[in-house]
Image (cartoon, rainbow, N blue to C red):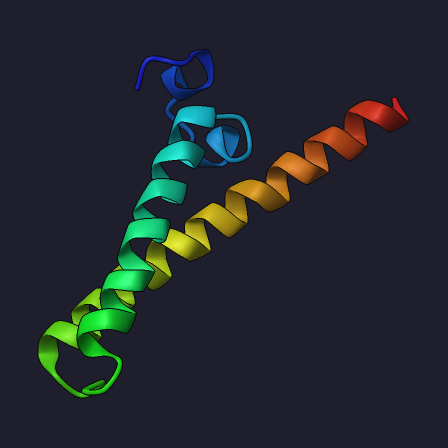
Length: 80
């Protein structure tokens, strides 16, 4: 990644600051969840369904973590 915060090697410092990461996670979540719903919601025990479910859950969880840190930084900036 080429943004200033992504030049750091510590993962926690990137959370909530990398807009490119958040955009990519949003796109992957928006594409992944409808695919799972359309193709595998009726057969949730198939290997492909479980794999896509974990894939989408990981994207969404990481996006949620980014958004929580973004809100934390915004609140911290307004207080100080």
